[in-house]
Image 1 (tube, rainbow, N blue to C red):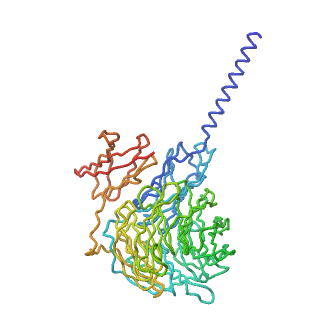
Image 2 (image 1 turned 180 degrees about the horizontal axis):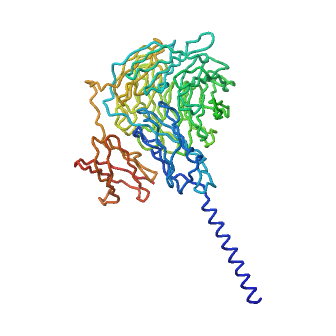
Image 3 (image 1 turned 135 degrees about the horizontal axis):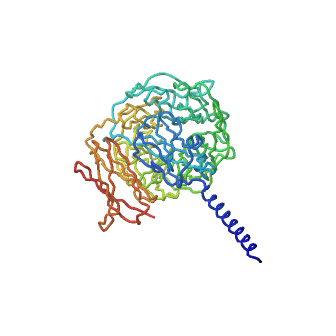
Length: 605
């Protein structure tokens, strides 16, 4: 081999190797973006109501309209889907709500796979769906005053939301026995802005409506209406679209694959940025002792979407309602139902594409009427609580001590514990909400026999103490919480079956002799313990000032320090901890006015 041949051969090989390295580098550079951070954090509570949603990635992302429209925010009370695209800055995608969210409402967020890398050649591999709950104003969390208003016959379900865009929450009830020849009715009562309801609007739906839900199904910025119709064989689900002014004159009926649907939930189960429907049937078509949940996917058609049956999921028999949430923290919405004639709650996990599986049956109390998912112990995952009509330990017919079964999540979607929280007589519905503004979620339940709402205060760890029994009209069935009078505090709304009324009870800071006011935390940390390389501190400030934030380890050594600007009102500050070893740390917020706030923080692997 002569020198020329060798040189050419070497040059060719060098060129080939360089080309391979270039291709490899290009392949690495063209890798799709990966989500590295969410703000607010997944399942966070006490989030400031006007907070922007920010998602961070492992690399810069593109600025195309498709990427900027990939972030969807859904309010269940105010304005439905938030309009407009997000903004891109390097490796972050941020969207600020058009208006403040409702006080104490749960907001759902979808990041679709339309997000692309900066060269716009690779997409996000897997969508992300998560939720957070907004802050409420500090209060004593005691209720009084309000009003009672007639609605249709035997209202079983109730919900609140701003259906006419005037900035206050209206009330809708599902009237189970209001069945004119053409079907059942949903009563709509509008708010005057001060918590006083009026009007006589009745929306025709299928027969025997049991539950009503508000959601922006067509992504036009207003709240549409759905009802689960328990006595209708062909119109088991009614869909009514809002014209933007609170009129629901157009829509259609759908049939699932079961009998006597009672439970109804809405959420983006396949991560495509559209809200889907889960319909829980009391029994299925095969047997009176087996039950299913029908999964109905939103096809996104314009101007009015249709819902396509994609799966029937078997659950424990005779569920009355259904709750959705990401119980295993994998970025998609799972669901839980509770059996009304056994002692089981069925947990079914999502594969990310809206297909559900699993066989986990969580032991709970007897004759459960409702189940709710919420982070009750402040550790960043969703726990479950149920409303059990009969006491867990007493025989059937002993109504004197209904309970709520609280089962804590291990972070992977497995539930355990045996806590039974005493309630009133005949617990029918349950809601988790921060009624005293202290940064944790309390439990409230309607008591159908004693005609009251039981308020059980959370100590922040998932333990609940006895609180007020709030009197309402006869036959309290449905329960909703919302800021009815615009003061930032959560008020109670019930639907009362035997009296065919709704009751509004305002959060009035009435001092009860038997109930000392709770100590309000000025500084809260979420989640605590933290496992995500980050936690968020929340602080309610009386004035704007500077502050020093320090973190010291168990030996008193300073491991992190930063200066922050505290704004008047609610503040939320992320603290990165990925570089710190697991252990117990001491957090200090030293304000310019000399006030010093402290918290212990636990970091886990």
